[in-house]
Length: 114
Image (cartoon, rainbow, N blue to C red; front, side, top):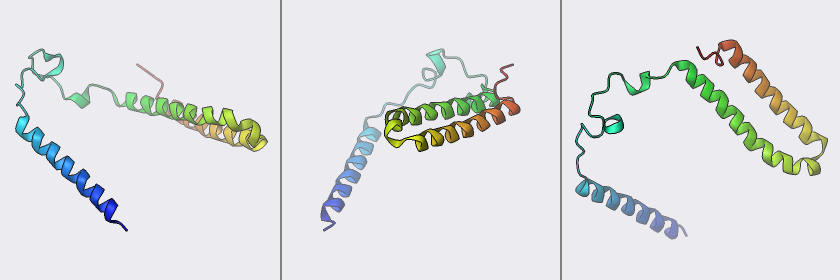
């Protein structure tokens, strides 16, 4: 009964192992001076994660929240007619939750850029 699933899992694992072995045998080690940022050959002066202020991460989370909001609003706009007033109430509750999140982010200073 499960022989097909087991066979596909074995085939998938063997393909992964084969590709990994092929990569390990065919890889050419990169010269460290050519893999630096923009291939400038200069050593980095700071760590890659220390370049951005922590405030930018909060701003990007707020952006992602509004991006996901639009993902929910497009299908909602299509079915709002057949769902009726309950769909409108649910969307306003959702937007109210986002408004609370924006008020919190504003209070925390996520929108201050300097």
